[in-house]
Length: 171
Image (cartoon, rainbow, N blue to C red; front, side):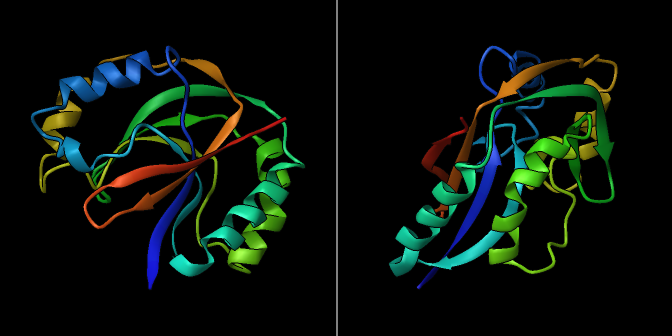
């Protein structure tokens, strides 16, 4: 059987205090029991055989050996109404992208996404049609700052929600 996985960087506390505050403000619009924490997708949702999960973990461990902690700078908060996504835009970070490139190629020769471009605050966990209502509540909030990205988390979907399965240290 194949399960769904997601590889992400989750900003540490208290760095994500403002993002958590925004999620609390949006709580009546969010399906919190299925929500991922604010995160940067290193590798978007993909499928992997459960029986070979150990191979996935080994490949990630090998890939992160070449990675080191990076400072991630937050620029602004943005709403993509078409894709029902609220996120914090971050400055480009070539260091993280470069160190994970080999791993991306093992999973998919041509990734169809822009890694490390934003921190997803609310995505697919918003009730249908509530993005505009949620956005109206948070669009005036300023979101600036940064944090040290020193861990990568592998999430696995258990059929109901995303669970943090493994955490890999950078450095």
